[in-house]
Length: 297
Image 1 (spheres, rainbow, N blue to C red):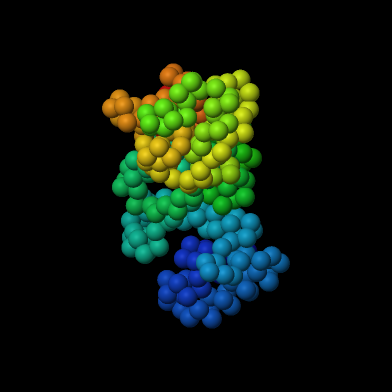
Image 2: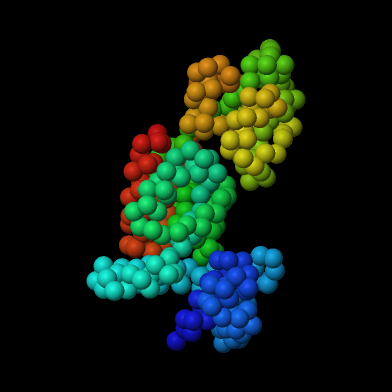
């Protein structure tokens, strides 16, 4: 039988990032929290929390935290049957862990989350990663649901197709004049600075291969911000792939132009949820699907 008070202590250490903060939430001393966590680790034979600033879960600790999250979801359902539990639930609201890509978060996904939180009162812990890698968060048990580009369901997960997020390769008119006065060729792309989100971002490479028929090595600025991409492009720093939601008005006004008019890149997105949690976060799935239907191709 799992020691749930100790497991809840692990959950709070991970959620708050420290033993001191977990102790305040539980109304006990940091020493008491440390004893609970260490005792559970000894009984299970694994390390659950990597001590540091902040404290973070090991893979085993992440799985335990998701279990506690699922228990919270199950307990929440009892409120409908036993209204007297409402006070107890309000004192410890459930926090759902979700992963998404930055461009979805910066365009259509946040309104879906807002609608869900208003309806349910749940709290959210949102992890941001490349759409090709958010599924790894599900595999490691670090999140309950994820927006991902993976078309196959992660083991133990359900999958729904969200739609296609459309990207346009854009730059400022001045940048186009400086770097592509003779057209967007492989030679010109090899010399023109691009914008890349991080080392996992492959959108620019994919677009280049489609545009000129072969991969091209090009210089790049590293800029981990969806809105920063737009502002940097308008400032003439480089060219980059931007979601149409963020550049539609700028393209219409002429502040940004397409490198190759009509040459877009579509990324199909999926919503994957843990089998265990899926029935209990149906409200979240509905909100996500409804907003995706309106925003994605």
